[in-house]
Length: 196
Image (cartoon, rainbow, N blue to C red; front, side, top):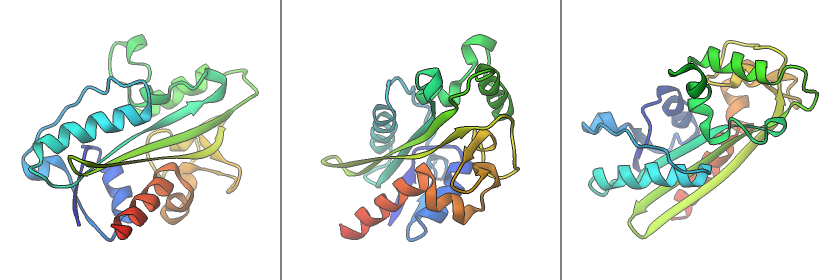
């Protein structure tokens, strides 16, 4: 099935290509669509549905898949959470690089002993205007003491998995896709598409 991803993030597309390998994933720009949706929701599910519904209107009936994800840290009351991509923008007045966001997160965790955190991913799949499915999954771990590894993207270098004794940035693609929030949600979407 050809599915349009509601993202311009090439890292997400590459990761989802491996997870949803039975399908052809295309980006809005491949269809000449320029989409910039304000993620005004306060939950992952709200934001994924906002993106999916907006893109579906522009895609002429093609199936759409949107993903909203982030890192929720227990000691920070769930922050950065749905604001993970925009973390630190208010303080610095600009969009931060991934490395800067990781540094800010580590600074905000300085001296905190409870370092438990979850990566959260909500996927919204729209097949037609009356067939809308959502899946939300997590990947539990800890905020590391400093960045480790060169793989992955985003907060992966500072997200430590006790199961592997590595950060998400140190996992192989296969390891990460088997246990990550996006990998787990993608597997359920795959099973759903097969069942349909």
